[in-house]
Image 1: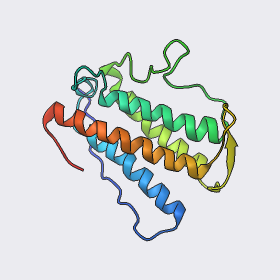
Image 2: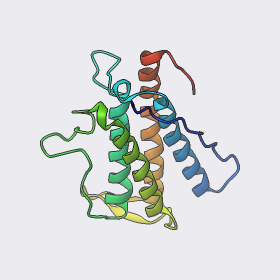
Image 3: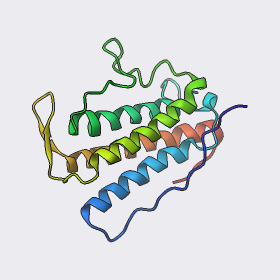
Image 4: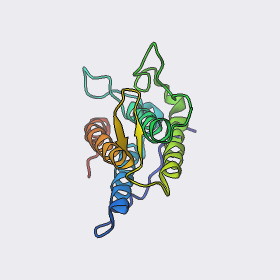
Length: 172
């Protein structure tokens, strides 16, 4: 049997909430949006580039956002000494390369697991809590939330185009 990305119920954004709830709500909405763009597609479809000459795929976006979640929340903010999931010294963009449709279910599950781990790392931490990057920039957790919302929003625009080219499905 061929795996198909599951349909999800996209969470709604809180409308009158404190800053933390709004940031988490917008991030969850954009996370869910990416998963919605993948819903109902097989691994083969998720790994298929649809907008030549770009090699960009929905599966590549899933892997990239798994990588970005891990880097910003766990490695940089929380300082966890964990390996990168896809990138290597030889190929820093490996999250977009060497896609295996047979691994689409595992890649989808990795994103869900990384989201849960990142939410656990951020839970109970103050938005003003800072960390220093390897380039010497001091950032705070608030910055990470805003950056992740921007990262997902930008890539969800790509996902819209990729999905429409695959099967004509459009939507918000």
